[in-house]
Length: 468
Image (cartoon, rainbow, N blue to C red; front, side):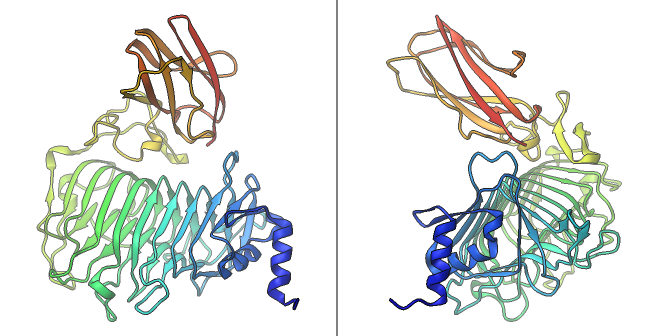
């Protein structure tokens, strides 16, 4: 058998990592660059980072085959990918389907007390003729922070997180349960769709969903995207909902030439001047686009309703034909727990807890505070059961399912390890069946908790772990 360098690399990696169904487990000591090189040769589709809170240093990489990078289930602290060496290059160039889940990207090297110089963290570069002309990209349950092109938060006015380059396009974009914080410029952007070469179909993405995300200290627009200005093309389907925008540039959303966007259930607070000197909260154009259920507080706009503006006279000459539901635009203090230090948990007296279009709180629901919702199923069980919550560990929401065989009054309560009750999820009459409860522990600190189902001679208890 002929042994070459790739065979040797494979042997080393297989001896260091646990491999199952094209998944490799990677320790900090293994080297993330080694794992990426191995996986991107078609040897694996999933990389699991296994060191609890581990600092994974790597250098810029091109993703040219499908890949998921995620934290291993059960870690107390998210693993950190340290961003280095990308002043003139994207840190991650996306040319195929890519997903990150449960990790932190950090441009600050705490060990050396130094910010790296970063232009783009993620850059979509797939163009006509590429192996995958429309790669999907997902960022879920992640944190991306400290992104400054010139490595100095005090002076950098550049450095963004996600960018679609000129002429490029992607498939489905999903940003969910993710925090973007401390940037020199935009967090999410595609600002050259109209420039030659215009991407195929005239769109930067097939769909873009931004849901349950928090943007904090973003010096450019938090989201800046555009269409190609050709009304005969079907625009990117854009949904932005349940998001927080705090201490960020005054124009948090800069949306040009995109029809049928849906923007709702936002909390926009404590805005700053930022890089662009504009007195608008959101600028948008496009027939069929809607804005509703938004709270703006301390945004330095004399008339906060007027802050939602059609930006006429842009490069395409587009005019605003979308609508703002002014009856659901508020100017209320949401009562954050500690916004100055990045804790946007809604206090119990918050006036925005049920103002969203879906009856939930405005803004990123990860900060909504302790709360529950109950879902019932038309199944009659043969015995009582209390299932393990899922997911477990969780942050900050989880589901608890239980089964009861007799009608009666039941309670489902959560206790800390001192035996103190911290949440009363159910205390009511229930019919026989399978019931599912959604629990939000946003007001609680990390730790082990007990949840107990009692009633009709039933007393069942299980443990769950909250990790923040």
